[in-house]
Length: 236
View 1: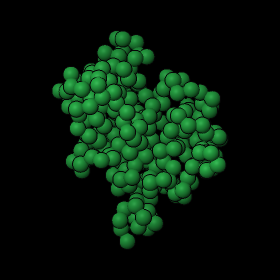
View 2 (view 1 turned 30 degrees about the vertical axis):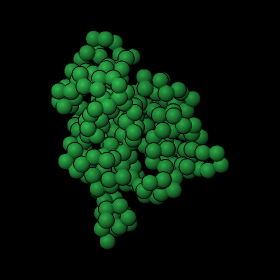
View 3 (view 1 turned 45 degrees about the horizontal axis):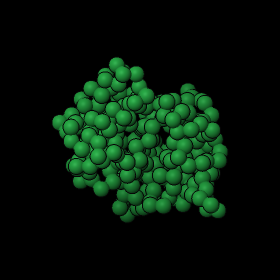
View 4 (view 1 turned 90 degrees about the vertical axis):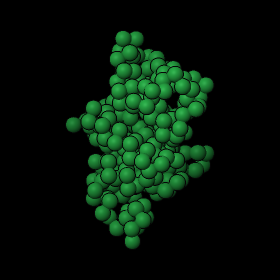
């Protein structure tokens, strides 16, 4: 089976600094793959490079196609989408308008159908569809960022720290949504500092330190690894 996303020996540099070094990972169709690590490990840099927001040297393939030279729009059209850490919503626009903007390249009839499915998946957004995005709570803003991404019909959804700044109850809701998205056929690449939650939801995992992958394997396998337990799960 061809990997949906295949990153092979990738380097990302900020000036003379290698933020990501010789990194390889892959996501198979139907998988949830998580990347965990401390702040500054290079996790967000990895996602931004995959999305085309940063230049990367090395192999970047999506569904078998070399996307190294593709712009962001072409990557989105192919089914790759990123929900950034800062969510980057249009605060002065309504919930509905943020969502519609996310699907602006989708044919109108299809866009209406997808919008209805997003409201079904996120009932809170349906209740607040006329509300300005800037007035939403943190959890609602994360739901809106994810809903807006779904409007582009992604095949692989990349989530950058979706639990950041959220109350535990809302975090549980977000990870439940991640599971349901996979069940609906959307593959997930999840970058997350909440290692326990990420490993509970993922099929496979990578651990990054200082721009490199230092461990990889099945999520439950890594959750029981003493090095991961001590460094990321608070277990000694």
